[in-house]
Length: 346
Ligand SMILES: *Cc1c(COP(=O)(O)O)cnc(C)c1O
Image (cartoon, rainbow, N blue to C red; front, side, top):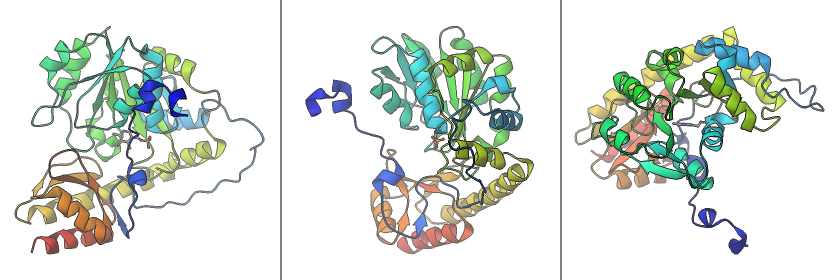
């Protein structure tokens, strides 16, 4: 069997999602999921018929929420499928490249790898900002540049002036893809207003995080109409299951949006609670975070991660030395986690 597989796939290490890593416990703060389990109703009617390729009501609702026109919006199976569509549409295998800036989200690299697209890696600076000089020196063959802000796993925002400089630098050369999976926790930092000035900007969004619908698999890409039209050429014919469209539309209704806004405020307050509590433990460094998670540096990150795991507090280890990513859960989960860490160091 192995011999039949493409060489690049033979050597590929799949994305180690929090789900794949597993664990057992009662505090799950490893996947940046929402602790809120909201109720939805669907009647499961019309399942004998195919769905619309891009359900009108859903597209209009998300476009209105994001402040763009429906023609600037495409919905996909999570933001992850948006990443894949962009690479498939813009990068010629073995000819073109993507560029990304680690430490960051792992799927840009894995999606490129599975499609035989080269990767240029330009690490973030020591304060986790863009290294524009190095990016400029590495643009040969690059068609897509992935920038995540708030960045996963570091939690910081990428400076707006640097994003604008990057868009200018790459005009008519490459697409800048802003991954805004966590932007609902800090909507004022969105780059969506830059769409009116830049044809080479695409923005990834998702209902998995602030909208508490990770299990629904519903994401969006926002861009100008010309770019959206290209993505519509490569997407599958019936990409949105009928129940997904119905639930997502409810989440984006007036009542749904009000609920999300309230839950975002709640989670941001819990993040502040964790931030303050952890900062008071000596020896820890808590980085400022803008999403529903915090990156924390411990004297021995691996030991802390394992000890927490063994007591049923499941966190996410990170490639950054001694750093562990902690998702913001409900107040009870945050208290338990903080209590465990405080005890561990006392
Ligand atoms: C969670 C996440 C995604 C993927 O979101 P889905 O819509 O669940 O596929 C994309 N980018 C970043 C940075 C994420 O953290």
